[in-house]
Image (cartoon, rainbow, N blue to C red; front, side, top):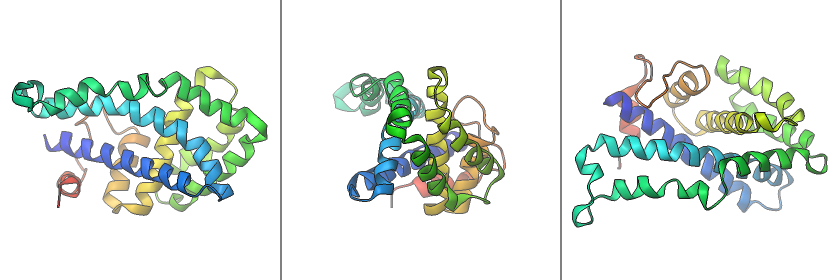
Length: 213
């Protein structure tokens, strides 16, 4: 259970960091760099956070067992959150639409080079801190420049989201958070469900960081 809770805490912090980074880009509408970041992060954040949200809500409900599922006397808040979570993508732009919007941003008006440069600058603050992150950061600009195949759109949106999340955790979170994220989400030392972080993960620290103060 510690593994599950730590994994969920890691997912939640990364999603929050990405959402707040997009909010900053939206607030700074007169900054040319932030205009580019807003254009690329809007579909990317929308795509990835919505996709991960339903899985996170399901796991959170399961952690509470039957009490998480029943809705007697208005107590089943997790069941309602889980049921409503898909609306984030269904009503506000489906995953395919967000992935195609990313390609539209990269194809339109000769912006691909500018966006690739902006993204490289955004990721530069975390370069050299983790080998898996460095490999992804090095590959992304070329993938953005060559973003012409719709079959690759979802994968590109996912990888941009993960890379930006990692760079944000490097800047704004303790080292153990960044390392756990890179090792699981970027380096592949992770299963296909929450609660499959490697045994060397700082479980207690991740859980403690997520607890209300």
